[in-house]
Length: 432
Ligand code: SF4
Image 1 (cartoon, rainbow, N blue to C red):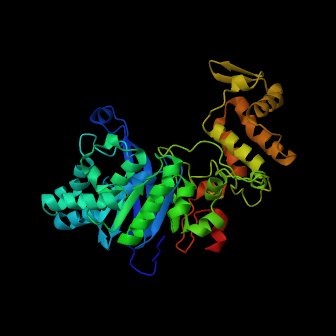
Image 2: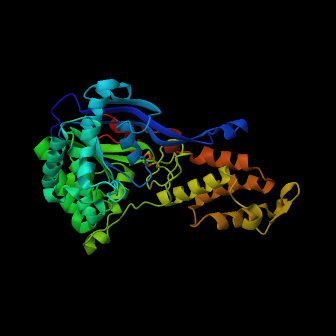
Image 3: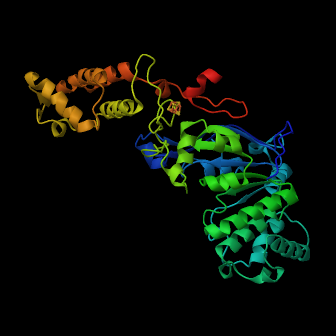
């Protein structure tokens, strides 16, 4: 690792970056009056990468890490935001300046099997960027390719071989050689070792570290693998559902994580010692919500083990989570009332519950949708809230639950601060 964060001017500054993909946006869709649906892959992301450092971008698959890397390099058109490279807005570069950026900012892709053209010798592959940018004579380009092959641990004699003649680790070395051909300052490493055997991963990471030292490189390392991040990064940015939720020096993120998502990610890493395995864990539950319809407020709230109840509500997290799930089902009208209760009959007019059976109907409903017994005080509130469903009044039921249990976590999206170790979580609001 080589860290130089002393410079005021970061090499890369990302501000308010958004990348939305639109579904139902074809001519036919518009003809039939379909509204385009935005898939918010990257949503208002800010970060900096300083010269000589490695910033790790980590998160579960589908959180928007790779789209961030591609948009930052202008391989994808941004929906909004600015990326400055050496102080210049990458999205406005034209002509020579654009070419210069393309030379200076390279990428190593995840899959060394598909990122190399099987019909091209590896020599041609490595020379390709030099040819595109018209650098050197044919002989000089070949010499450079041989030099790079040696530098990444392969042999210059292998220059006329084809990708299929190499192992996965060797192909990734070829991809790295290609990325180095134009002597870039900055490389986006997109899951550079995830397709490789564990035994080869460390060798490739060590090579990347050596090259960084030798060529003063700056890296943005995209990975879902925390051990890779820990091995090579100076700082880490944790991403969840298109947003950055925590950033900080690698030792702080791993030693004293703040955001419940970061903690859960770290807890999900298997531990060797039995003591460690038996400790209290904040594990991740539930599925990642769709970026088409992200939760209101904090996007992690549907899986967070620390959701903040209203100030006047004293309740254990498990019970609160149960009630939140119930509320979501009610708001989405996602309970089959006649299946949930023997006391409900579906008629042409809707649900029909004998008024003298309302208590029994509510009891059936609770047994159907709740996994645990709620504390008596909350049990009574929930019963009162569910009673309107006996008349099919979903809105009133949802309103009663919302009035009693709405959390700041669903009302306000917490913002990432700008100190050394900022976190986007309402648990830390007092610190700001
Ligand atoms: S803001 Fe609330 S839901 Fe989001 S991580 Fe913090 S405690 Fe959890």
